[in-house]
Image (cartoon, rainbow, N blue to C red; front, side, top):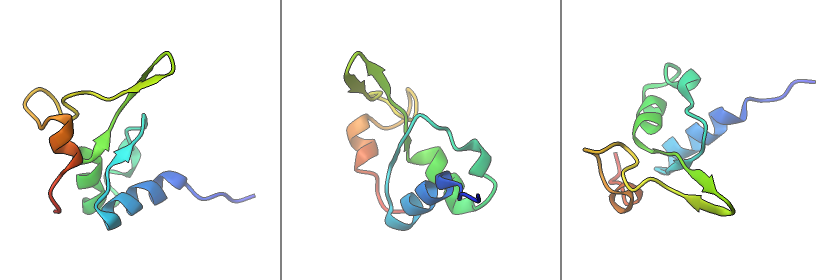
Length: 78
């Protein structure tokens, strides 16, 4: 049985529709496949953690000097 690699669909969809990816995956294996995908993975990947039954997102998804979570989610089109 042949199955497709669904990570490609996720990254491609985020690139096509200017979306944010919410995932625990880092998609590093796809960074070299397409420059646009690399940009999405580096700039629009939102990691999260579970605390009990509550999902939590970092207040600074791109690091201390990056945008706040609200700014990140309202990212400008690129």
